[in-house]
Image (tube, rainbow, N blue to C red):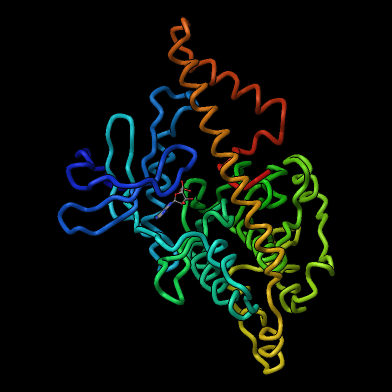
Length: 361
Ligand code: AMP
């Protein structure tokens, strides 16, 4: 079991600027007083009342911490320390200062497939390591794929946000409908037993977007997106994939497979000729093909805009919830929130998906 230190985090760390916001709190830069080293502090609000929507169950924070401790790998964000107060848990994480991979790529004029593959390889290595330990991420999307730093010409991939990750135990059947609509696998939507293969579906979607700037299943609404996923409704539109190699398309096709058992694993991906070419012809094909940068830039700009929009929406909802709790004569207003949770899950299957703060529509 991880040690949650009861000391005040501010006695050891100076709290700095906000780096980002998640569903249940903020991530801020923190400076260790003893060494002067900078880290990222993930401040997670803990639920005071079991059924409240405000904050997280302590048990889910414990799970995130245990998983982070189990996945020490160069391509996965490292956990240094954990502090706990009455209302908050603070995870002290390695500072990942290079920003999101997609933003880094969007700033480039051109990118060859062979250059993009260097990043894909690192993502697959991190993921393969997790999967070999029976841990699935369950929320792979561009926002959670970051780069180690801004100074190096070849920064390293760092996978972040293990808030939905799960460790499988032998014989266990695990189902979850959480995730982000654009990136989730059909078995998540169908509420079927899950495995690490659900992450591989998300890798297929991310690769498709990276190469074309199109999101394969994106509909006008989340419900339409989910329907498209279930129907396997996607194609390689020649207008967007004219610069893409046939090997890259084959790689995606072997990931966007409905039956999780038939999907490539991370290990198999690392051996696919698009990632690890064997012949000179395969090497040449990758070097001749490039990503559709014009459309990718458009996709990324839209994604960032949606993220900001969703952030404003979430802040407004939080303020409303707080006002509701303070202003109500009901002795237990949070209990009501609990009841509305139950209503949601019974009437709208799509709303079962715990909406993550993201670029989703
Ligand atoms: P999370 O709740 O883990 O998804 O984090 C929310 C946001 O905070 C992310 O989208 C990142 O922008 C930022 N963030 C999270 N972890 C780190 C980290 N270790 N270093 C720098 N920024 C981070």
